[in-house]
Length: 308
Image (cartoon, rainbow, N blue to C red):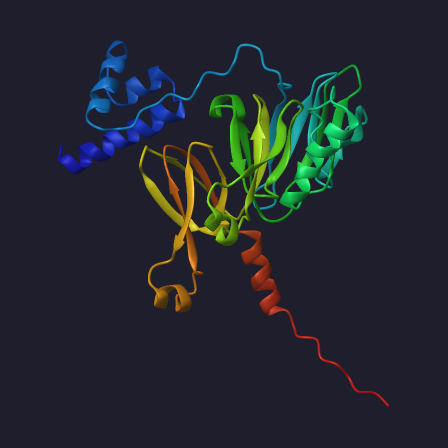
């Protein structure tokens, strides 16, 4: 096998290993005896390939362990199944349909500060205004004696992504307004970017949302979704609006898109996002801002009429 093909094979193995693919399946796919898998991983690590298993989910979750099903193609919705007493939180206006046994309650913030005082709750919820979101969210609780379902719809064409925070190190960062819903116990906060350039030119603004905990959360991406697992030091350049979510370990910076001529006349914007691993990133092919710009450009211009 040529060195290039061997390198590609090793990279595929590393990506699947880092994603948490079952060891037995990896051994069968790459013709490595399962008892020698750790030795093979050590061999690749010495050759410079970045290999790291995702952290194991904790034995006892603090967030509700909800079941779900994502339905649809271009206009998706996620149907969450709740056991009696379980709850899920969602952005105001995201609910599509729910069973009769589901009760809904408007809450300040994400409801994670139940034991906090009124001012602490207001401060925690008030930080959400900085991301362009409402002070309030809605909690949906199964108040019945049997399983019940509630569905949440995507706001525009694209894909709904289910993320298990326990398997992703306990937190992800996502662009504002990407969050759709989550199991009760997941906290929805804000994360300031360290570099001012990201804040002024990053497209997502100076602030990203931070989803933390050990439960499931659902985010929405416009168009088609792309997932990349970046090795340590590996770089990816993308349109600033195309970033949906990333692990906190990924370094996010903004740089000029080539030379001045390219930046001014290339049609791709002045700046590009540079993402540096290690960590996983999720990208969207159709940011809502791009869709809105095209719709606005195609809309007929209003023309005034003189009367009298």
